[in-house]
Image (tube, rainbow, N blue to C red):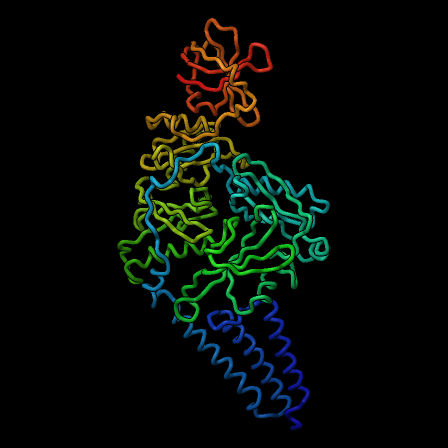
Length: 548
């Protein structure tokens, strides 16, 4: 009894308990047998217990049966569990099961509505980061915070934005800022490039950048001890209130392999209140529930193991552009765009042995998890990027990874060309089937008109925003036909206007690009038929319709 209650053993036992609590607090393992982290936790704590027991038993001159031997057994069992669990979960033994984790639906390109050129998202993550970082100057203590580089594309009250949370700048800055909390978040309009800092009446308290019990992952672990969590996304509801959406993973193969995301925890970033939802129950404002890496992993398994694991010739195997991504070379491998089904991730699909061409593309919906493959042969994305850059090689502009758009039934790559400072300078369209049909221009409207001319189509069916005629008295609208004798263009509030005069006519006519994209083809000598109304300026008429 004396040896049993010796001071070395009491110290060893206290050390083991404290070490176990500390490791659990710091690393937050899920208390579930379907989590590899739990077995790793048991192994680490078992090793600490074994080390402490050996020292304590030696100091107490005890044979070790009470402390050392049980600790060794725990370590041995955890090692066996990790080995068995790993072997029972890896792809080499379960390729068919991994391949069947998801079903990729096949879509028809005709299902994708014609793109609205006035609603194309031109701001990528890099541009959003450059624009958004400048907004922190509006805070009273901007040095305490950093803007996250997430900038996911969301649809907020009908407008596309890239949103990013604000983070604490580190532990010591957190000690200063924690009482005030995080004041808001950053929104960048993905169409107009306008960046704004949104400040909240109630500050954000729960965040991945916070510490102690306000750390989001620790807060979720306290609420759901046995859940295996995926990535957390920052989003806002229709009223601009901030939330975190965190996926819950469930193992489907072996001990912890083949994890799928079947439910999601939505946490109020201000109060910390959480609620679990299934995919079908998610609120309408949620755009990002499924992680991009998770969706692309599912696609990879489906394509890679189509003919089993040991398919050395890669027969029947396809790969995605995301699989080939190389961030250091500027090839990101995917983009985010708006479809009829909401926000979607886009990436091309290439045969495993022919990376220079695509056999189609994938649209993956991060809200529903639905992945659709659209058959479409043509050049892969980097070829289109190179073609667009070749048009402005003297200027040194770099093309962003493209998105796919529907231009009068033609699968078309849309890209932005940026200068060395990361500023958007040009817009480009490239035909997927024939990337030699690539055009660029200073505005989206001009680039589209040139593209339509290049592929031999008209712009009549392209969707554009209607000209605002609320301030025009329709009773004063007149029409005329004439030949242009003078023509200039001007940019007003981000829109292109064409100013021209007609032969034997003293009026100056102003026409918005929204009247017709084909106006970029106007030149002196073109005969036009217009409908117009007078403006407040004498002898200046506003065109409401133009044909030529």
